[in-house]
Image 1 (cartoon, rainbow, N blue to C red):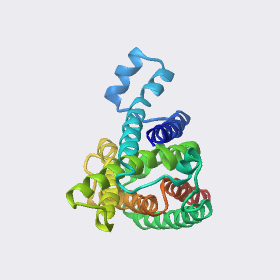
Image 2: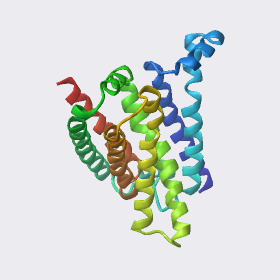
Image 3: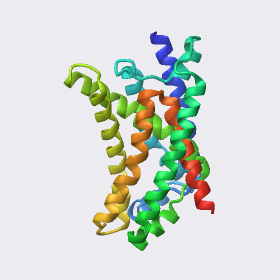
Image 4: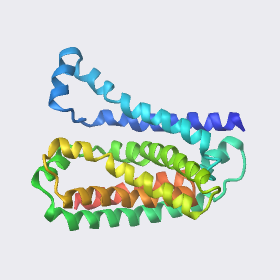
Amino acid sequence: MKKEKLILGTLLFLLGIIGVLSMLTMEIPIPEEARGILEAQFTPQQIKLLLLANPTIMLLVAVILGTVFYKKAGLKAPILEGVIGRKEINPSIKDILKSGVLLGVLSGILLTTISLLFVPSLPEEFIALGENLKPSLAVRFLYGGITEEIIMRFGLMTFLVWLCSLIFKGLNSTVYWIGIVIAAFLFALGHFPIVYQSISEPSAVLLSYIIIGNMVGGIVFGWLYWKKGLEAAFIAHIFAHVVMVVVERF
């Protein structure tokens, strides 16, 4: 069992690293005060590699937490576990794909609708920021769809569910929902620093948009991780981005 968990953790770390490396395909914003210091000591390529250190560390911590606690939290990565242990995959791959694609498409539609509703009320600086930070397709599908899910669901949500199970003395739907919602909320809060760096006084509407827009997907992906497994969350996150990319093109 320990060997299988070690293999699972290694595979997830390698998958996550692919997503981290995909960030080399986009320009990562650097605060002006930090940019001058970095450019005086490193080449542009070295700076890009240095900026990957933080997500790599988060990924490593998430994989360790997830590998240690996912079984205790009653969570699973059925496809990877089935392949590693050479056992039956439950739920079936067909069920995982169906659930992931369906809820991913619905999430993409919902997130697009939320964006369209809020855009008229958002400050121009924020719209311009979004244009400047627009991630590449590789970042959306690989970092967003895989690495973020490993960090936020396999790592953070797993740990929160396990922690809540100790507090509530067992696993039940309340424990899972607490883990799902808190992980989604913390992910949304993680976007606040760059907003405050770019906009001196963000409005309540803007902050509400950041929270709602980032929590909706996280709640859906968290539910899928709970009910269908980590791979379903991967698939849903990727297909949510597929929908949003298609809408943006038209």
